[in-house]
Amino acid sequence: MEMMIQEQETESKGSFYYEKEGKRLAEMTFSKAGSDKIIIDHTTVNDSLKGTGMGGKLVEYAVDYARKHKVKIIPLCTFAKAKLERNPAWNDVL
Image 1 (spheres, helix red, strand yellow):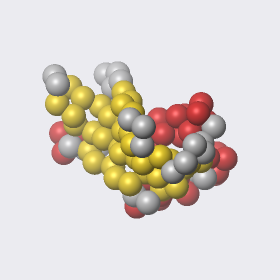
Image 2 (cartoon, helix red, strand yellow):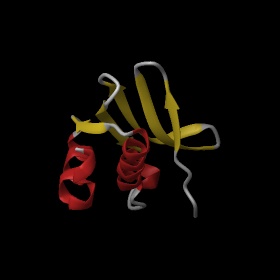
Image 3 (cartoon, one colour):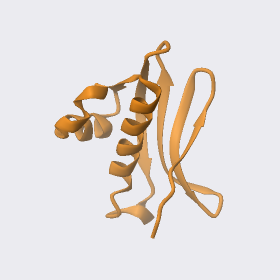
Image 4 (cartoon, helix red, strand yellow):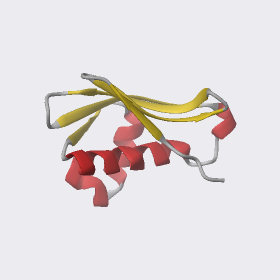
């Protein structure tokens, strides 16, 4: 089952999310800190997605986003922080 993560942005904030049938079941929110950083402040995953690795997929999507937009990630969200710090391949975005 392919779970397409989408993104939504405003001038100062954004989110990466997965929705099904119009309902957001997983979301990672961030704020922009200038033109070169994003602050990940919250990650939430619906219980129906427990065990699917969706939280990790959101972190991976954030890493890809950071690389594509040449920004660094400041992970205030404890979940994102733990995932990012455990994967040395992602150190370039921290």
